[in-house]
Length: 152
Length: 152
View 1 (cartoon, one colour):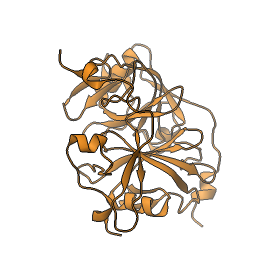
View 2 (cartoon, rainbow over the protein chains, first blue to last red):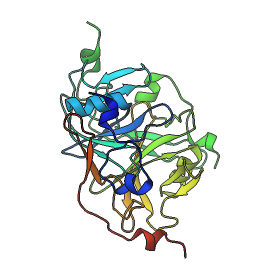
View 3 (cartoon, rainbow over the protein chains, first blue to last red):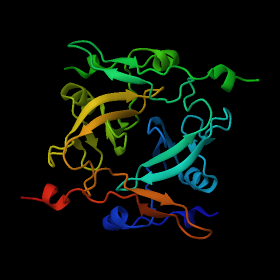
């Protein structure tokens, strides 16, 4: 499959906002942010990035394929852990520079720390002169990351 | 309030992932992505960006203040439209380089096109040789953007 044939060229504002062509905007690094959410519970799971090719692969196989900015490689989520994300729906926003993936999260969770979601802490504003703090939002670890991701 | 006193310095991996210090990571442009979601329905509303100062202001006033990359200015959401986002909860992810804002969306909607959410279209993969298409996910426009954002 040729990437050029998968996405439409960027049109004018009206076309981008109201049209039926999928013309995602990739940033200066060639990336678009993708928020994965649990399609059933609507819980936010993780925010990662895709480049053209990973988005093309995601559409093709129906499982989330990101681009790892730290490892600079394609990241088929779950390839190591088994915690694949089956794509139920991909949405884009008005200016088509962000994605939401509604997914069925396979396995115990999306987060490499062993939790269902990467968003497991909330910010609590500090009182005057103190830094803001984080509080765990509950749920805790649902799997042992060492067992899942550990070298064998 | 001094920004230096609001956020903690970035520590090691364990501290960032498991600690109670809020040490958000801003990218090379000084920005962190923030996904706003309806705190009640969990619908994704919009994805925008914050810099240190806009995140500090958000924590201070309890309403979403983004940084507009196109206008290069602070963007107190709702300042023009009245469609303020009251922050119910801010979450961060494992490596603290992304935010989720659970908000109470005041007024008719978050999107400048007149819809409740910016994510009003889903991607439908094209068949062989065809580009992917977008389909409206329903809901339609909940307000008249010209009336709300129009010059008076």
